Amino acid sequence: MNDERNPALERLFASANRPLADETFVGDVMAKTSWWSTPRIAIAIAVCVVAAPIAWLVAAPLNEALMWLMQLITAPIVDAGSGASRAVLPINSVGAVVAFALLAMRAVTRRLFSARA
Image (spheres, rainbow, N blue to C red):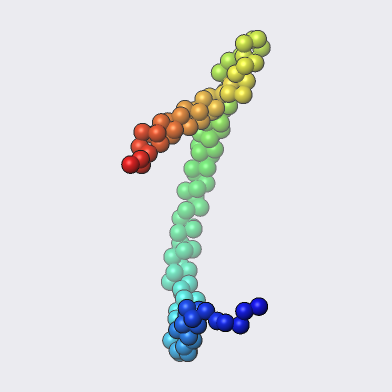
């Protein structure tokens, strides 16, 4: 074991060894904890009361749109009963084709815009 101390670490600890101003530290902590004052709580409750009916009105159409999108993405491209479709079964959906297209576009843009000197 080495008993020699690193001078850079000694300087670092010496610069950090200073007394903290108690009153300002307590004041800063209390200011951060009292962020939720009464007016802010009232505004937050008012926003929630206004947002709840809007969310209730939007929830059903949004759910229907998302269900339609999921059915579109999972729709098969080729009928699974034909013999040739077994080769494309891993990518036999609209979502897989879209994902591969996005990956291909990403690869092309990376290749075109790569930072080579």
